[in-house]
Length: 423
Ligand code: S3P
Image (cartoon, rainbow, N blue to C red; front, side, top):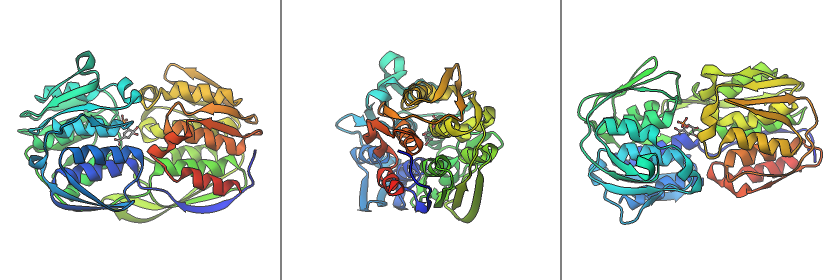
């Protein structure tokens, strides 16, 4: 059922990438770390529960404020049971980087989606530093066992633009002997590099290279988490799907390594108004308003892709309504997200009447036709579930999303906001 045009302002929950980092860094710092705006979503709660199993004292003052009583990496203890990261790739990959250089031994497991996701991208370079990590299929998949050991710094050319890989190596590098340098081919999100200096750590960035000297300790601090641009993207998309609407998201992170979707909105002919209102812990934040009718299809690829990798499912939905063809290239990384997001996006949008097809490294959408609607599935993937729900706002017959509970992973208040838009 198509909904009526709206003009709304919202804040969204805290950034998922930044929330994970804040609690992980606080846990290995010495002294108290306060976090405000922490994302109380399932992924970040998995990080908290793994850290508690490692003996870290984390107190929740309320849903979005935490205090961590850090005792440094030396304070971490071997857990009695496997650490369960749930659905969270960031938790397991960054945790491997942290545990590799400690005295801890631990087993790491996750859900069925995690069991299918490649871990060799972090396991192999960590082994080059001296890490002792074993696991299914020679450590390519969970369950993984890490036996903390002495590490030496490395110079690693990362073949993929992945902030999880970069962050895991930087965290291992902090405990290693000598310096660690990571060189990327394309910039991935830089939240780790932005946050570590606040914990008293030296990080030097030079173009596509990031360096940390070894043997550094972190000191507790205060982190204020910006709203998650990747959650805000669904609200802006709602405004673009319902012509005549306008959506402002306040206090949202606008780090340039994340704002690719806003550039694409502009390329499609939408209006994007960005008012920067501050900088929280090195991260620019602002109020961002999006509106626009009569959008047109776009061709995207290359260095833009890592800047909007998590927004591609919702971009496909907007493209379905834009006039003309949209082509998304160079996005093979989507195949190893919570689901194979090329396949799940294409399969589910086809079910509700979108003319979309899969390519080797992306998808092609023929836009401009009415979305019919019907039954579809999130496949247990939060971003697929939200993208389909937004498609429903403009669909002739509405959309019913099975497996919508997955949305709790990153945006627990999504359903209530969408319900408010629909009345
Ligand atoms: C994340 C990095 C990205 C992103 C994921 C969160 C992070 O993954 O897709 O949702 O917090 O570092 P990659 O690093 O694998 O690209």
